[in-house]
Length: 148
Image 1 (cartoon, rainbow, N blue to C red):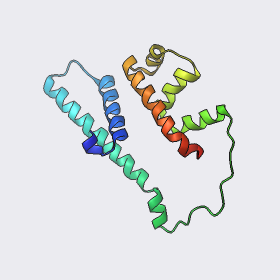
Image 2: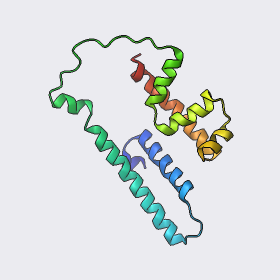
Image 3: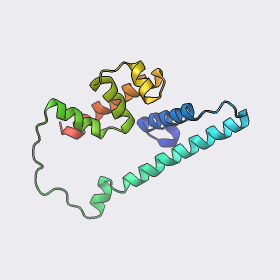
């Protein structure tokens, strides 16, 4: 997957998305040829969705803004002092929906991994991986979101 999307984090996310789609849509009544075709199509469309989203987001990239003549902010942004609860909410809003959901269940609602998996309709192993990735993504985003 890394060779296709050229980014380690995106490769992990696309692979996770494919795995979630496979787990939720697997039909054991299909023959092996049908399953192989279905897996190929599922993978192909998921990768296409990734590239569509990336292309859509790149239209608003910093480089595109500079090339269109944008000069940047004219004054310093106001300094914001967030409380701990506000920092958590701001950071959660910056995360993808599934990451936000798993962190909310685990840490704000104090649910077990098993209960979180049950509520999200996922396996315990999948929730463990998502929790790890969500925490890592939140740690990576914090300096960008809060400017520190």
